[in-house]
Length: 367
Image (cartoon, rainbow, N blue to C red):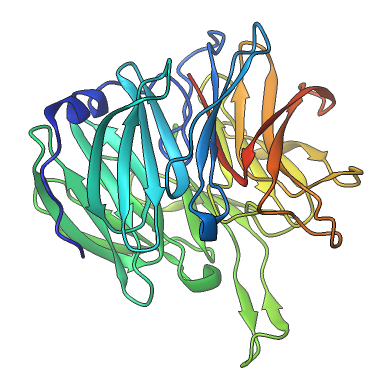
């Protein structure tokens, strides 16, 4: 892993603040039904062009503000009182940028962290999952004084991270969803236990009355990767505080986003989980307390938009924000180099609004 230098104290002051809303990738639970003041869209950008950015949308005025490019792929963002903590991947290494939420200027920067995938802030410590191709991933703990407190090996291709039952829990997605475990880490000692989760491709984690695990499902190709020979559906698994399986919901397709970013959003206000199935262009809504699917929104068949990437629910407005890709001029597949669109749905799944964001939407956050 690339050495991790010290951070400006301001960055860790930002990180220690309780999150106000949802985040890609990074702890996206809304605390109540207060109206979201802003919708923050992380635009991954075309990776080869390193042109990821942020889009800020004011739901009251309908104003859309585009930020400058961030010189990398924007994986996700945490909305805090002190700024927008942004996870960025580049050709060589990753970094964390802190941006002013009003004008988008850079207020602090942290470099030297490999491929940050998800993060969770608790008690002044930022826990970040990192992934390196062909090697086990890590859970990096960044302390309030700017120091690297620990670098803990976890499983292959780690994604989501959350605090649960006084542990830090990491979802090990594995190559093409081949993982089947969670890494359960004791924060004080970095002692790690591997827990079989009972699904393939655990990807995103949410703390409710139970630990909610969203699993992508597994894809297996032939030797030259020209054909799929096996594919399993996504699942949502509910675990208790002893990490025992209370119930599993099998999804109608693989859970995923169009560009491999976070695939779900948990609304604490309504105790609902919104899961994107990008291949079939469906959104499955699950009542977490009742452990049941309540409805499925089908977004397929749009004349110009494809896929699903980035999702957040504003409970105060009953507005579901969903990122979509434009259809390529070369055929019926997503255009990864053109601006995406955020579609706004009501509770019945009907479109009530839309606005243009940036290139290759990766996540949506409420502030």
